Image 1 (tube, rainbow, N blue to C red):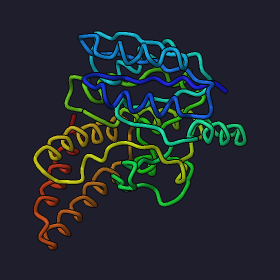
Image 2 (image 1 turned 30 degrees about the vertical axis):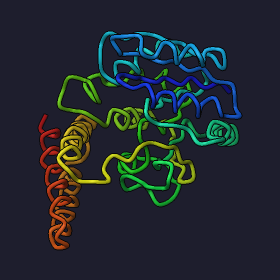
Image 3 (image 1 turned 90 degrees about the vertical axis):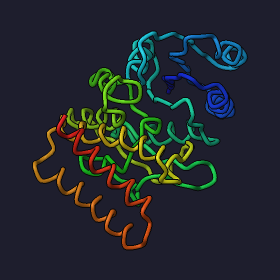
Image 4 (image 1 turned 45 degrees about the horizontal axis):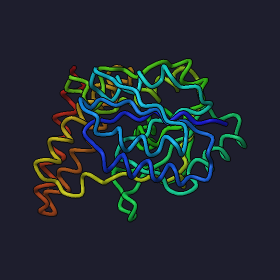
Length: 278
């Protein structure tokens, strides 16, 4: 079972080095890494040259910015049996690829698996599903993030590319949820995907503080979430319910005197509504 890892990157070097180190430390070696480089310079060349001797690595350029565009450029080059999309600032724990192979080899009925993440010290971000579960259009929001998705080749062949209007760098206000959209399209085609609560990847936690920067980032994320809910034809009651749940979080934060968190959630609701309205 061969992995094709498609990594979009721009503006980072140290984080890419950390990922490459974690990938080289994997016991399972049947993989290829396709680095889709959107930098306007050669900052990654010396680093990638060092690892080119350790495992199969392709370095391709993408003049068009955006994570979804970069992933689509990489998808055109993959030849693996399992496709995954590591972020350029994530990293893999020891034994991750071996675990994915073991699960997919022993569960032929599964078309893909997903996991959760921590920052490496156990700190989490988001509300993950409490236990392993098959994904559906309602629990998928708590059961996957782009870099934790591992799909059999047949899924990618059927679904095609990412929606290039979604995600970081897309040039639209919809700055996230392209991975969730991809999974929703997969589920709509009848593929069986499972979240594994015990499969943990690593990524920096970015909302430890609810400052202005966190609010700006959340605004981009939530517009994407609202947009993906709208274009995937959720029932009329679903979107208001998600907003009401967040409004409850605003009230709870205010009751506790946590005004920064209340503002953060207020920004989230407004942005999600903006995304839904398109």
